[in-house]
Length: 350
Image (cartoon, rainbow, N blue to C red):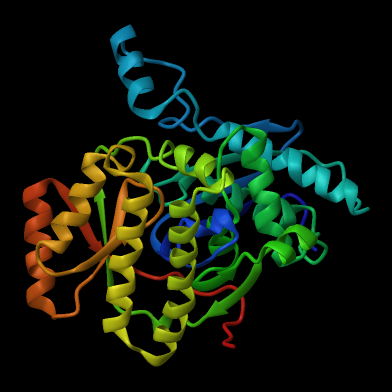
């Protein structure tokens, strides 16, 4: 049991959609990676009253001028991370109530920090939620009462409380860590509320490189039209989305065989199918430029999420990596090696 009076600090990592996204929102299959490049942390300190401490950067209440405030809102939005902490507490309490899990009545103060770049499709918001949920599970000593496979769903419900459109994939990667294969079979998902999650060994991955923009545009708009078309039975969207899902199935086998040439082809195909479905206007010029910058040096490339960052695979050694770094620097993009996070659930294969 957690010692009373001790503070708790938990961390959660950013995530990369490796193959198959965005089919996770369409009963498909994906492979996701939790990465150590960026993370969010939440600290829980016992206190007399329940409190949420605003972040000095991400939850500002003081500005140098009206113009400064307007610029901040235009670039960062109105909301910081405190609302995520509050929503996590609410859904945690609801889950425990629904499952007959008793909670003690001691109060606490939650605060957070994050270095996940905003609007890069790296799941910065859900990293805060994941870390907060871990703190609550430890503080109330109920980690064994909330199933691991249920935790992504609880996290997702916290963000849905706030009107954030998202899916399970990101949260699964952050809860499970490392490399995860995900199957969102419709019948299983509707029956259990969860997908089928298979942890894999992160050592199976080739060296990947993360490319992101210093000032990314909002990535949240790219799903809207495709979702309606898919629901309406649009044949192009339906067939493309099924093929995207199959890329993850083939990618899992290619990883097990260490066939990185196939992986590169699957990555490129993943982006091409996304482009076919969404169109250039929805994807955004900057996002397309990141992909084309990587491809200009012969690297395979695809989105990490819905925009703002991409991952690249260089199969031709350090010379190609150097060319990628130079091309990205010239285009104004940041590039760095992907560092997979450790697995928190024992890897397996099937």
